[in-house]
Length: 406
Image 1: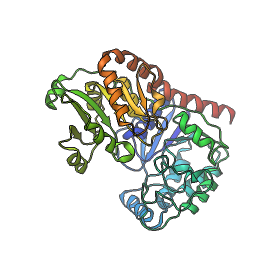
Image 2: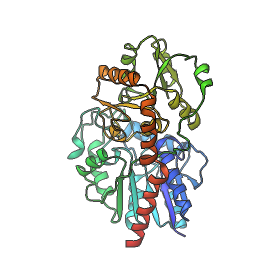
Image 3: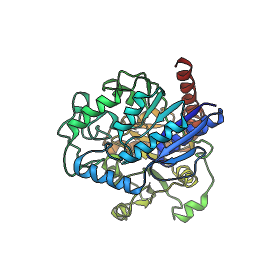
Image 4: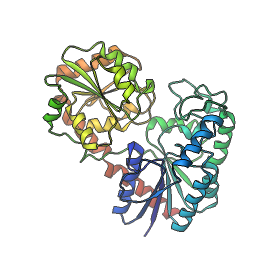
């Protein structure tokens, strides 16, 4: 039977981890063997899980990143051991996801993949592969990635360096090693990201756009009125925001400004805040909640909300939008990256970045029509366009096409 070997920073956790898990499940259903190699955030998986390195490897990689801006160039032994596992397993396809995250040596990995005869599929979840440092550049308005990174304006942003700026050398090195694979297909997760790749040094490779998928059997309208009582939000019009990490890029300050425009019977729930952020928003008509991996709890919150707000300033194709749609909740988002691609006029609104009054206006429109007038269209679009079974089946079809032409 054919064998799939995936590589990602996390397993069955967060958006990329759940995507890798979903692809593995789809492969297993089609009779494949499936392996997922990961570095952290261990969760149960239907695929055979392989840990890459250990906590010390991650910390040492972090030190080299912070001092020398050598992200993706540490973890030498961990990567060599990973390659030994790949060679022993002998996969038919290697599927890459996020290679950043303090756990891999990209040069060693790509030297091996370039010399092997294994077809490579690389799902691009962000822009890190085409820059000399950052994972996102829209918020900073930087376009150096098109020609040559140097003097990085986001050196202290993830993956942060407080010492050297190696963006010039990193860019040259990434361009060299990431274009050395003879047999690779790129999978951008949005039309927007596909356009970005077209303007980058990776444009020589064939591409297939596959939007992210979600489990629409988990993310579906629920009945949990106890949650409303537990949160003491009886008779409140609820606006929801969800993020894995909250910062200005994700729109935290925009939510604080939006809260000033709320009516007495309206409240914002923000999921994924840290303790400091919860204290910061306390008393501002915002209920701050911590991070959760409980998808049932998330589905309850999405269903409870009258509208999902995503004022992101930098994004590729946020799964939170489609999770909300699947729960029958209309979405309001900024015209940012691939974020609007999940929506239609029947399922939500797109406003310009920083337009707080526009957010308020969209909320008023949804409120005047009633959430129920949007719910059926939201659910239908999520099931039809972003159900994980249909989305991840596209990966299996791509793998089979590659093997057929090999």
